[in-house]
Length: 261
Image (cartoon, rainbow, N blue to C red; front, side, top):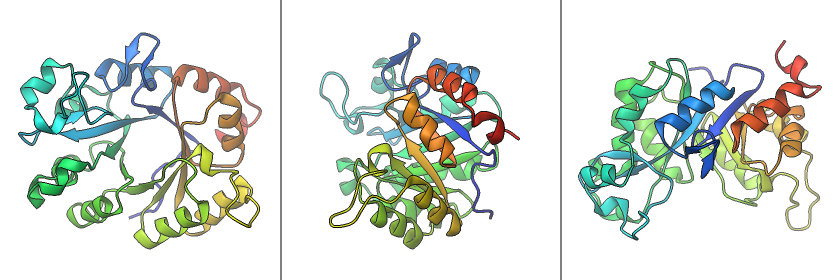
């Protein structure tokens, strides 16, 4: 299997669709938001995967509903009444060819689940059925979930997701130890020095990861200026909020012509 997940010189990924919260009238993690992101210029979208008490997978970022109940403690019917869409239904509504980044939301309730009913296992089962139908990548903060996905669906590309200000050296080494295709870094991890050492340039980090035959995704740059800096540093993909704004800025940047040759 090739180590390249993103074949284009640069890929724009819509965070939860058009972006976190409500962007251009589209609420995050809804079919309308994902379709709008594709129309606005995103080649991929990122979505969050949670499990319900009856082992359905739904698309939601937070582990709890607005009333404080955990998603893992309600049925799929109740989740639907709360406006959450089932993952399998959502995939049927997405445009053909639109890439999907699945973020596995491992959580407290996975701790007492039988192995075949954890969030990662349920997602692996769905991906095994759908692998090859569209470009796909599974990201997680949970290294064990990634290991499980690798065993269950060997051909499915995987990526390690790291949190804010996560030490960059640890992140790069962890991606290598896990042997995943993608390292997904929060923007705050780039340019932040480790204790006693200067911050390595973004270009150096990207070149190091590429030399290990992995790709770099940066998630949620705070503004378009940062997005342009990362694009110029040859990161492979950006996960962004407000897709239209970022798509326009990147299309108008001096680097855009070179990236699309």
